[in-house]
Image 1: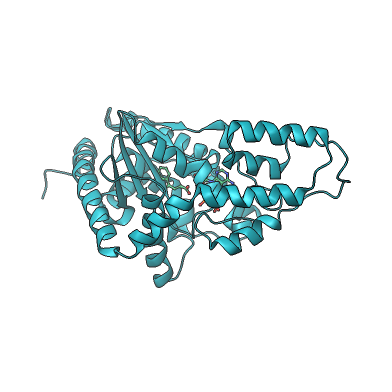
Image 2: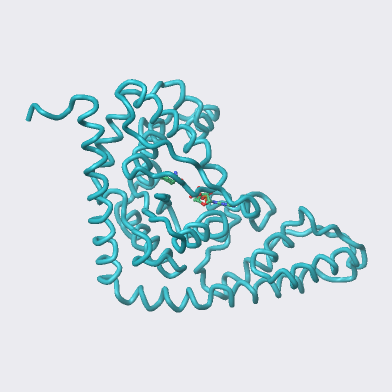
Length: 324
Ligand code: ADP
Ligand code: TRP
């Protein structure tokens, strides 16, 4: 089974990205499947308009993924733009994609409903994503909940192409781990870099602790029993704690007579030790950027091999080969 996913290099990864997406990628590389993971810099170009920033973010994303356990011997890691076949497939798919499907996609719809103008890149973003998936005959696409719609769109686009030209593409399925589908941020809303409520995985430990201590909590008296369910501090704690620790904290909540400050301190400690090994590995890798570039180049070569095969299949099916 072919597994594939992409992640945009739009900023440093936060706990939401890790527990909602990256951790699943890493777990999946250890199965029988062949896993392809890429850094979606072409997609990031729809929002990042700074050359240095995009270049640095792309390298940082690779370092973060490798430090967090992505193993280049088990999974193929590459940068999206290093496989130019994806842009050609994207155009081919665009020709059989109904406008209506794209008009319903949330990123575009949200922007439009706010009265903002969108670029064609944002509008056709789901087509490029479909090309990413279809180019490698991907069967399973691990994603965060917010990307399920895009995988469904990919299935529609593939179906529409297959309907016109024959069975060229494999229809993929989205894969979401439900219990970490939504990691809350410091304010209790969904953690997102755009909401200023995120804690970065590799943030400096002192700054990270300060953020954790600033998690918004209610002002009910300490003695009052509290419900752990739906409490975002409790949810964050349970991401890092053992089941026994989580169980104990749930009991403490129900009993009452505790302070949120203590829970936050414990959470900061747990988070620090949870990522300590990855942090050390990241520092080690950051000192050898040429090693990281070699991993990405090797990944891109492997990905291009498969990409060339599938692109040719699509070109042949629609009559783009044979005249040149
Ligand atoms: P952001 O909202 O910070 O811009 P992205 O949209 O770049 O994050 O998300 C990248 C991946 O991480 C996606 O697969 C997304 O579903 C996942 N993800 C982001 N934030 C969260 C969150 N708070 N909880 C769970 N998954 C998340
Ligand atoms: N759109 C995805 C996100 O923002 C990133 C992405 C691009 C992707 N292409 C993909 C994810 C293909 C899965 C498969 O998170």
